[in-house]
Image (cartoon, rainbow, N blue to C red; front, side, top):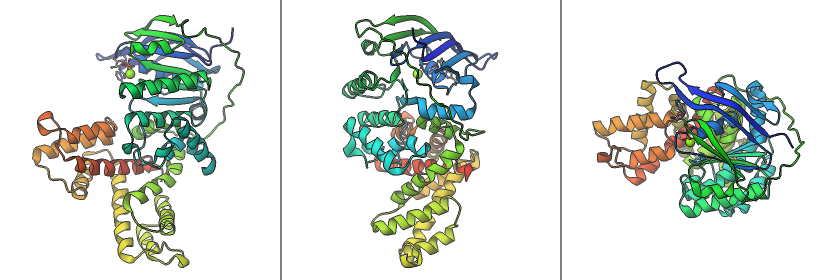
Length: 445
Ligand code: ADP
Ligand code: MG
């Protein structure tokens, strides 16, 4: 009998331990999962499914107990080993997709490769192959907001696969989808388990999904209550798997901000430095498309290089202005003065607000929301202003996602929303997501 790929031994996750509000999310769960298995973690809402999945991923540290993957105890890994583990072994898919709205579909899929420092041509090729496989290659240059939920989830599955990990973890991946898109995701999962031989662990509370799995772990109140082997599906054949994953040391962060933790969950990379440095070309590119239209490719890419310099703090905003205006032959971007000034001012405002929202205090919240009110020309009375600020705070603190914010801004006043027009909501969201992208790991440069 082969060794289990994943061994969860008496895992306990206790929040607020010893306090009156103590929650035992996981209360001593032991599970063994073998290479190439398709396992479903099943149970009612709040029973600890996600906690178990995050425990397996290493994103949730045990209060007690052990999680061993490929013979390695996650708790004993150095942070550096964990980074490598995430990049190499784990792909994650979430109910809420967690795509970056300001990146194209292709760039979203490429991101995990960016973190591994692979070259542009290689990572685009790998990403395009996955997009083709999932029938969304024609969407490659679009942005997530232009896609249906089903398409978004296929993008996020492509992102989870792009580094070719051994294990795919999915947390209610069909939870936000209509039944046709949900079926499509289930078919894809069947294929990546059956054909690609990925070890697949899916969390669900939908009993209709159970037929797909080799094995079902039933949970209730933080405990495993039963395990079913689904012999109808196919007999489990556990193959000897001897490939050991070489764990290489890379730089890892000392402190991880809430934003980065979200990014980390999304992109399997924990390195503050890597995120800070490697996102810069993307940030520059996005800032470009955000602000600009109608320039030649040369003018655009020259300006993009300048933005990179600005984001790396190699030049200041005045130099940006001058260089944008300068002829290309003289090393500038060949724009005109007016456009250079208004562009540089806009970039500066956005960058400043990215710093502002990193402060996480009352004053910065007011500066940021006042900025949005001005730039998006919002007209808010006292009550709406209070709500607007409260919802923006939740977004900045990552307590709600882009979709949550969209709902709150869009919902009528009588239902507790801000009651903005649809088009206005889109403007606020786009501006906010842009600023949030720039603010990721802003402290590192
Ligand atoms: P499921 O995914 O099955 O719906 P979860 O694993 O998300 O359940 O949560 C299990 C329990 O742990 C729930 O009661 C939840 O409220 C609680 N819980 C989860 N995360 C936290 C946290 N950060 N602090 C306190 N309680 C939490
Ligand atoms: Mg859950």
